[in-house]
Amino acid sequence: MPVNWINVKPLSFNVLLLLERAQLSWLPGWLPEQPLAVALHANPAVRWYMENKNPAIKAWVEAVCNQHPAVEDPAAIRMAEETVMASLNDLLTYAVAPQIYADQEFLTYADEELLSLTDFAGKIVIDLGAGTGRLTFIAAKAGAKAVFAVEPVENLRHYIREEARKLGVSNVYAVDGLITRIPFYDDFADVVMGGHVFGDAMPEELAECERVVKPGGMVIFCPGSAAQEGEHHDFLVAHGFACASFIEPPDLPVRKYWKQI
Image (cartoon, rainbow, N blue to C red):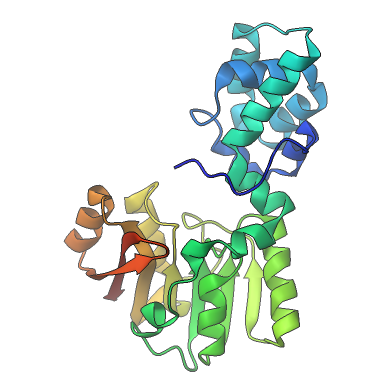
């Protein structure tokens, strides 16, 4: 669902140079192609960066630019740039203003929604797609031995490290990774968890979570799906997850899921 967390109008189109390899891989099928082509024709450095930072999308970028011609009108170019940046509002928020994401109302649900699912005391915990650390810091403050905040966006990892420093939290470690490529060995963690992260490649994601959790450990998705996301719900329940509902502020019904391995 599109978001409008930051105003993209003041931003230079060069802000796309802050996107990570993984984020670039998500762009085919996401971005409006005609405005993207106009913007890339006018910003060859951004096109070069996209093609070389993630060569897997080079053919797609070339095809988009070949299909749609350049324009000369500065106003039309700027409109195209803003259209593309608006489509990337969430990713650009992570890159330039992570505090705005951390302050979103939907993240203000009660800590107890997570704490009621397991005892974190003394546990090794992995938080997948950690973002600005909403779940990470709940577990850390609840006495986890260590919480590894797995997050592919460097600026969000920096944010988590700075928050840990400000809070005087010494058991949080921010590391690069994805839910489909968790950078730990088999049977590593007592708890593997994530919020707003599960669902793009469900079989692969669940298999990776179960790989790194110890026998007897917990896999938790909190929140794991919105109430209307039936496919996610059906998949997790079919794979043995228990679930419960709660309200994500201000008024979105969501579900949390947990399973002992």
